[in-house]
Image (cartoon, rainbow, N blue to C red):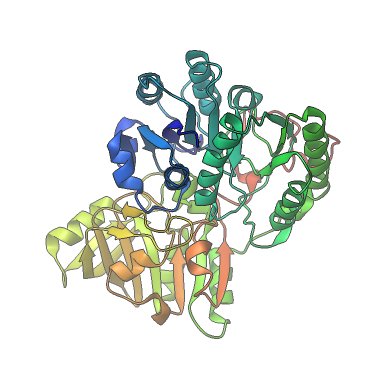
Length: 492
């Protein structure tokens, strides 16, 4: 058996160019900024991309050399100096490895830097130039990648998740190392073809509906001989860059024409189904009325327009304002980002009454601050371990966290911008999610991995916001036109 030396690392950021939150080095360090052995410690037992890479390499008896890994919550454009630092740390540590057989990277695919619209393409091109050309570079990508020819040209293989929520990120990490084995040991020659479409879709889950049907089509194509992978990249619609758009990427074993035929065939199916992705969502008030008419509990209401997982502030007040107006019992809002209020709650202690302005402090698009009188009923450090299938075993830190009672509504206030992935953050504050009629949260789709099994019903509500389901709310300047659904009547 060949023992391979594999470098593992990555830079992961989904950039919302409409956000005014700078994704600088300090912001990244709130989430992940790891060197060498720290990567092993952080990802031990974690079911995501890098956890999968490490586990599969260990299974094969390969040597993993951890290099550098940086990740931040989706937010605004990355300053150029921050990107230069991350790129230098990653590439230099890879180049320091004397006997290197392959590189395995966890990237996102929708990173944007000041002056550089394609973070991943820029990084891969520079790494490819610096490396021995015989060393393969295999990359895992997010489903919301805005795929470019530059990425395709400079990677040996690109492996995007197929599920949204991304419950298959661990499996894609496993696949990345399996690909390396095929390339280095079994002499497979991956050939990729990308077919890009002039269309965007809102953030659409793959549990059912049109995205589920497209996922099935790609899986059918993978059953054909010499087809190594076929993936539907949804693109990230909250980024104003020229190369935005859905794409089909097919990888074959040295069968270029086959890869092209398959990509074009699946892309045509996607184009034909494009109108199926456009739906109208209820407002906050309408969603609450729907929830109250559902028998049983809990009913989950997700505020898709203020999803920190897509680069929004996480302190929007549109849904919370309506819940407080109706003063509904058995309701918990999890969570809203307001570090000032969380800090004050920790300072005053449990039982204290706070007269504060809650939320609405980052911008005015997502709602104004709410003047409330709140009682502090629980305090925690915000540290817990995820249990949902998407990131099971991973430790998260939401910073100083407080559960407040405002009227009859309970509100969990956090100090780090993040979406709600699973019920653990609710349980951390000392309550059982199953006891509540309404669980309101900020997320578009990832929360489903943790909540779909306990929810009687899930209701998505929308309003103007940096992650609104309605793409007509955004003022795109750089996107190539025409593009669906901004432009409805044209032929590709």
